[in-house]
Length: 364
Image 1 (tube, rainbow, N blue to C red):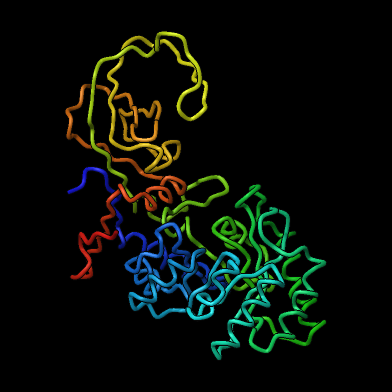
Image 2: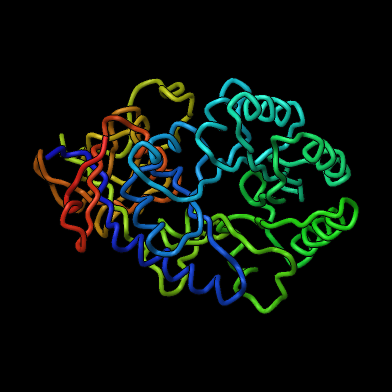
């Protein structure tokens, strides 16, 4: 077994999904479960689909195609605006795409016409976080553009918050989204099927006492996978926060001083390090680094303190000497999980107790 690995408890992920789907349904909301943090792993897609997510969402068409090729037959959303170079693949995949640019919409319409298809789109509107989205005053023009393209169908309107500037979903900005939808329907005599209000950052608002208005869908990733909400990284009551475990192998453990010596400059990542003299400690090195994960976003077990990381080494302080080959288990946050899933050097082991063909199954 590879000493550097990510172990995934799919039962816990499925239970998190089912609980969130049930709570959301009580508020009139459906759930799109996002698969991008796990690179569209078909095993994950199967579990969260079975747990009640009405659709799957991913940012990359490559992940969508991976799920389709594995036989996942479930509605899918492409969460990032399609690259013009990939519009043929997006249309062929039969996904609904999130869009903000009329030029891309025109290209999607042309690809759909060439393939004899109708392509569903969701227009994203900016509500203050300043990542993707049409400014509200631009939305009518974009709606008119979509309605004028016979191979496109306006399926919904959505918004995204908290991902760039941490702007929180509130009664005010969610109310603005509802008002925008009402305005579009009145102006164009259309019915908007899907109003996607945002991501896991919306959960405090969604499960609160305020009316949800026109919003009927949320796109959830971190809350499903890690059992936390991203605004404050707080655990969500009743959800599993330990579905993922990142395991690294010890390659050195020596008693060393905490103060470096010699003339200092920047380290290999352009950082200037200020050390504190705490005497000698057991310094243990693990075979994992910044190329494999985000060392600042991992919870270490009791008795282990993360000190520093380079591209291939993680330096920790341990209570006692450890032997080469010993393992230390960390709980990754969202950033650490995302990077570990992307690293080809981290083995992935997906485990599920109630499926005979999945226990201990690794994925590339």
